[in-house]
Image (cartoon, rainbow, N blue to C red; front, side, top):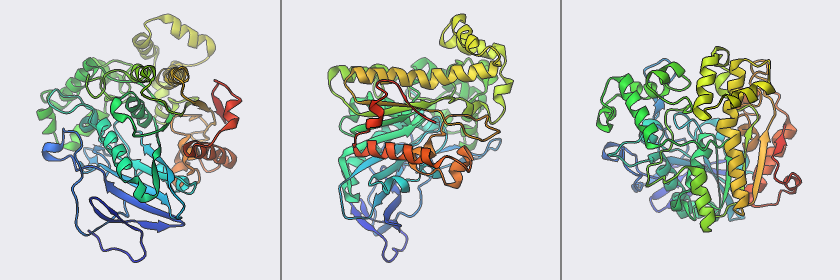
Length: 470
């Protein structure tokens, strides 16, 4: 334990004393363990309770990222097994309890973590919200399915973090009965799985889903990627064999499948599975695909949430434009994807008629944007409305000026606007230095008001149509 600092905020948790930092009217605690480090025999198990400590734990820095691939082309990895931690930003004022927003980071179930400056919770905390961001296991450790390991370990981590919030957030001034769980991309995809799980009952009362992809893997998909990964590494497709592979080669090999159509073809992976790992319908932790599972809970009357959800107008430009992949896509790749998701030439003809001058890459970009994001968001919004949930839908249509404007309204571009971080250096890597302040204020205010449970009358004028932010 580090030496306590004079005047720093201190709290006593059941596990021991913690000390955070104070910053402009906020108390901030980083790197709080919500579960034990999944090392040794715990690596493939459900999360276990965090051990107690003696003395004061100084929580002034983020915990390690989950294990993931390092810089492209290297044999290194980033992160650590001891990654099951969370971070809390809370107002320092005595007025409480405050509503709570739990942020689940994205990253394709392969990359990223709560330490990303995009996810800084200061602006939300200044809106009278206790903001919590979490890490969870990703990649092989979090989501690869093995018959002799706990399934969907990353989702079980998220449940453990939400239970920690229920048990402890009052100590930080938060109200455990006013918890909004929010996320983007893989984070919102994970949340959509949690919404369909009876085990999540009572852990959150409101939901924000930004660019929710509802994709899952069935057991056949899970077996295919396990065999493909083992084949690339030259080992048996078993948990024991893959566990013995050093983390650098293991994480790099898994990441090499992202967007690599020739490699996926070589190992018989389906074109629709852009990312190699996803939550798996294992029959126990995840019993059905998210939309069906949520529909069942709504029909049973066991769940109701106000939900804010939506997507961006040109999602896949985030993946296909920066590295020039959009220009390398040919007609054969386009047709393979369409055949896998639809099996009919009519779908391709429909998109081609809407944009007769578009290249194969541009067509695939729009088809995938709709397939992965817009269509799931629309289907989920419809199911939620029919199930009696207050449902606020949006579309983010502001075009980033990056790469001579070719990024457009791509995936993840809305995050700095939503979380109030559009002026940060990290945000400017996504949206440039001249992002419209009025749009940033508008979106940040809308999301904050939703978390606080305040009415958003401007949304009701749109009825069941998405509200456009541009």
